[in-house]
Length: 197
Image (cartoon, rainbow, N blue to C red):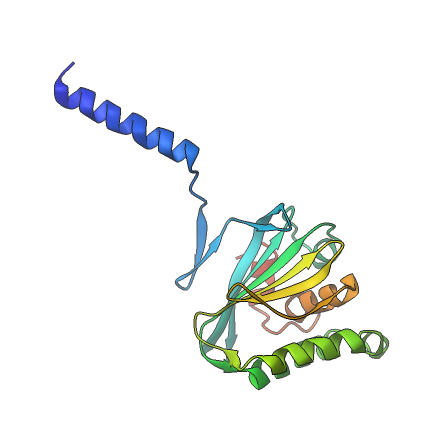
């Protein structure tokens, strides 16, 4: 065997060993924003169920990825999923806290009935205070909204916890319905989050 061939085989062996020891997690590219195939929430590995872009008129507002323990393709299955869950939002433009908070409230109100809105009022108020506590989202900011069983809804902005932990799973499902409900924030984003194109 020639020296060059031995060298090539040795280099290939090193690359394969490195790949096995340090697996590369594939990512989905959404308009230049990468969403990893998996995410870890409270020690549980979640799978990317779907991802897409929220647009308003012609503007790209943010990219959003939904992570679940197992892939689901119906709204009811997503809402009934036990275990941890994650919504990952990557801002694609600067948004004030008022803009983001107003859009959140509009989506929440549009996908819950009066009785549910009344029942979730304390949690909604806590979330409103969270929006008021930040100046807004800058382009490239990453907001994570996690459901952690036994703890509640936990939000982090660029790795820093913001707002109070909200313990009611019904509130987390109400948040999910902003994008997955009967009146989703973006009709073209909903099927993508459910694993479609």
